[in-house]
Image (cartoon, rainbow over all chains, first blue to last red; front, side):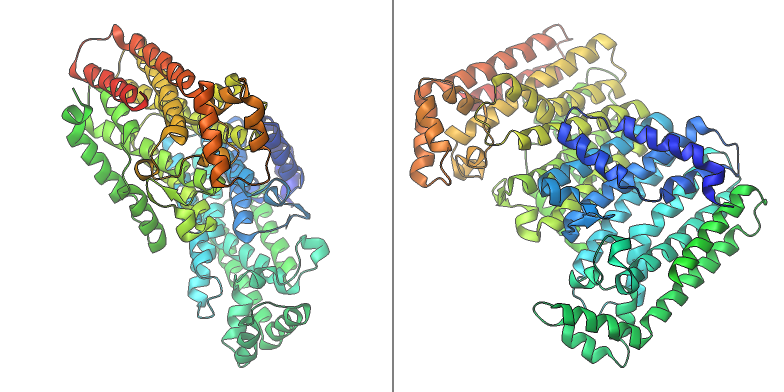
Length: 318
Length: 318
């Protein structure tokens, strides 16, 4: 059961709502946003809002704006992320900042944040707004932590997990939570879906980080090694640094700049150290935990769709 | 009647609340924010919230968090502003971005936005949050418009006024509005205070922009000419460009880079053209309008304090 089968029509409405909502008198803003939106992405977060809503009183009038708000918030963090990373490409297209400059990117992100709250102020409870503000705050702290720990070869697995929790998993958890909350699910169901979202988010980010070492630039839309070249050390590399290959890895990372040979060698060493397998196992354990949290829920089609999301991610990482 | 006499104690509480609220596990964030806060500023926006609240049922428990939120929002826009302007100094101190880098500055601003909404979600109505989101959106559009029109010698007075309306005056208007709204003022009083705020904000920004041509770098904390060097053409210069001195002004502005002599000459030409006087008169007409809007309000001390704010600004510009 694919989620498109269940909520595909409503996801289309989410996209339409985002498009309508992002109209602006500032042409550059509108063009930048339209490109961002049309570049695609899987709309995983809106899907989580809608699927979670299916466990209670599903009201599309309420849930579609919420799902749109979550995606707009995600877009805001992407735009600001790309400033930090100095990314030239995102989803295979030029980023807002590489096309329009950092300055426009700063305000494009701010505009999206403002729009998120504006959309929410129209459509949800103060409690949901509060939860969302907290997540935005955590995302910012996570990004700052990531930036601060750049090039830090002493970064631990625990620090990494905490960082991706704030950067990614909390918004997954929130997406599930507000969907279920708006549909008046019981507090037990709320908790299960939120935990599902968090653990799925952890697995999602670990899998995404793996692509920096195993991915195909043509598919991912960004060159392999991008993360560690920018000093962002993710799980496979952290593992390699702490393995018997650590010394050689560090020797390369300590260079002033990396040529293609260096990047290739680091990736080889990460593979040789077992860092890929270790990270896949870690992702798998989060997927298992996510699965366990929804095991007891009523077996409606949305439940099968959530499980299908887990399967899809497992396939992607193996 | 100075506003400090009336709401000085509550303004101190606003500062304490901001400080307490900006604690973060990310040390760099906390240090950056504390510096920003301690660098001062006149807390005009919180003062407008509190003074406007005096026209209705003044409840410090409600108004102090609102006033704090408005100042935190202002701080957020300052931090992101400085990224765009590439400012090295703000209020006589290094900016977040010059001290910590653009990347930290992006997320410091985002963190402040999130905090603003978090504080509001705790303390105000959905309607006030909606108004505030709209103002944030307008501020972003204003900043983008400003950025887009940089180095545009064809920029008109009308475009300038529209830009500063969005960039500054709307938040002044909102500060008055939410203070009065929270205190349950009548819709007539609400409207008068909002219009007062808007017109005061216009005069405030025009006066601030004048300092780029008349100011003392030691007092303003930024060198004269900063705005037009960065391509931001404000009212005195727009006037000069369209005067009989226009040709010489444009000839200098068209240079690849400006030396000290160029900057001095532009300032001289702006003075010679009458651009200073014109801008002062424009500020004065907004101050007069602001004054007229509150003329009919009950003569409580807060009213005298609002008038005193107008007088203070008039003194600053003459």
